[in-house]
Length: 441
Image 1 (tube, rainbow, N blue to C red):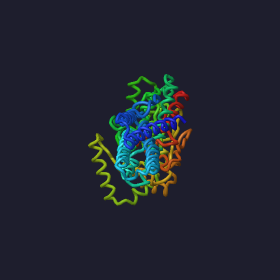
Image 2: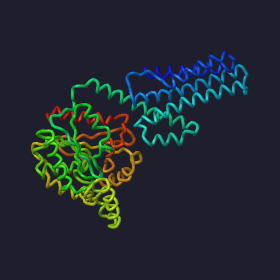
Image 3: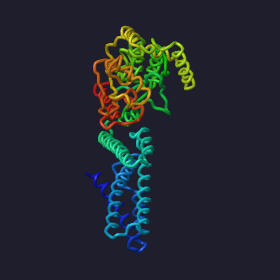
Image 4: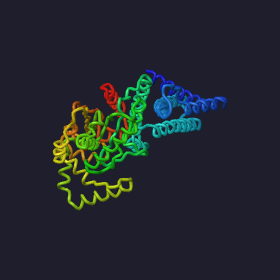
């Protein structure tokens, strides 16, 4: 209700200012009134609202959305009012009418671009897709209004979620709901590296730390066989134990990182240092489609892809990247053997998380392509890992969204930094870590 009142007030102020400017021209009123209307329009462009509940990036996005809403309302209201006035006074096609039309057009153009630039620069949820669609459809009648309404809807959802998040964090400030007994190690999956410049886990770490979590990263290389990645992770666990003085650590591992972690725990003796392992979209039972692709892809193609990948990640800092070894360990037959050799260890709490894509065409490449293969061979999946394969341990949580794209292998770790109207991925991880704390880990 407050939002409608705020936008209604802004639209009314803009409409009245434009109306006053047009009347000044039509009725030859004192020029000071024209100056007053210009000052009002300038003010609302600089300060669209006085919202105190939001700040920084969120305030800019909120003000931009308000300006765009006011733009739509005021364009309609002022245009209708001007047409009615000229029809009644029979002043069609006069110089005054042309001047008023130009004033309205210029003023609304400024309001629109002021709003859209604020939203484009600050919103994360509209993503690249809606930015491109907005630019392409910006000059197509009717379609541009539909696209603008879609952008406004997505932006409003983002603002609402951010306000709710800030409210929650204020209410639990000082409670350290994520302050677990043992520090947390976030372990990345295959084909990625932990990086300060590019955080594999998106906005999740900052949200966890804001609520009291003490975080570290796995730092293993991007593509090695499980035994070598597990060895690097085992050393990382020892380093964290030594650095913090803690008795144990909690591990939250994504994708192949979950298998690396299980190997370190079961085979390399890290069970004495690990309190809990939470695997996220990890292919515990492997990927049948990966086995099929490796078996049917020409050897020359496999070697060419592997050579290009290995060369690229040597430049990124890997000392011995092995694309084929990493992928080979994710096949169904390899994981079946892995599970026999790496049973769960008593005393370590195991739990898992899975998710699925709803529609193939609504996700990023190459997940759109791999989803088809995974669905045919493995069933409902996140673009790479089937739900059945992700299930492991004492507790299994399936993360769902009614959004057309669902929750992909990338969405589950906030890789794209995008929220969904019905899923706050950062809050999910806050709840997950808070639950670990409550369990005494």
